[in-house]
Length: 514
Image (cartoon, rainbow, N blue to C red):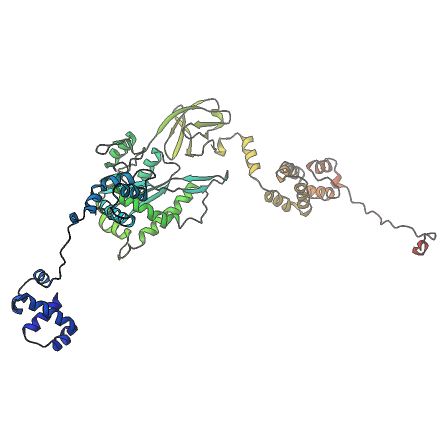
């Protein structure tokens, strides 16, 4: 429009079209076209200059009159069915093609399939409009579980353990927390919430999740009922509980987006790593999470860490003096193998063997298991969630069991080192003993007996006995014991004369066989 006004101004001043072309950079053909439109109005150029842009557009015919949608009866009919189409598309197996076939059968003069889909798509864009929310610092924490799990390998069984992944984020700064849990039960959720607040260094005003059963005991769009344990945790931390509407993930868009970021920044980065414990897995997660917080936002010059530290951290409520702790209490009888059972996890924990047959009281939380007898604590363990597993402390065992445990913990290298320290013949005999067994573990008891003989008879006699034993064909504990018991290792070695066949004159040579 400003070009049109320049042309109009030059024409009002009587400037030639050739000169206007040089000044305005528009061809004379176009200038002549506008001149004709100006003259058709019958209004002076000076009067046209006084009019607004909209009035000039109307005078020159630059605004095309809008055709009302109501003028097309097909569009009117289609719009009347929009609500029906949207409802039917949400049903299982219903497609756009099926709807169009039904539509065109009832209304043969209606839109063809391509236009039908285009109009449906336009309507869906309107229905899927999203609202921009302004988030305020330290006001809200959103939590959720990632859809995919992470794994670690149990070194004792070789089993691959699946771990649900808890994700939390502050929508204002995008500063979040991620942790892999043994399971997704409520005690673990509460533990993860405690760890989140500890990681943030403060408490926001409210926390929101979806309607997962650990969070909401009774779902309601307007007044959801939260679980008792969660309400107790919220009161302890002075934080309000919120729940998204059922089947409305966009009520917590920040954590939904943070789950996607977790897949890209943590899952993808750890995909080729192998972990052997939950603690090792969470340590790697924490490293990747800290790196993510240090990265700048896209198209911004600051990071989540900087935004959190500068504008949100100071506004968080202070942490309570102590973290909320869930404690459970139960009783058990110490079994013959001096272990007690925590039935919730079906895991056994050891106590000193002198309490076999005694009744004890067990107090346990998400992290520790404490065992009491007559008011005194007799054992404490880190809680283990492995079903049908055993957590044992060596000091709780009888002395003979400790010895067996030590023996089972030895390796071939241990015995060979002991033998090598004694002498080369002892080392060679130990190797022969190990090679004589089908499975090397079968040789360990023999090696234990040989070590005892070494301690009883001394290293010099043991070396001599092994040297003599290497002449035979049976390599065992009994062979060396017999040598030592009969003092055969102390006998002087006799030098046997070299045997030669006497010369004979009556031997036939090869020529006799021609």
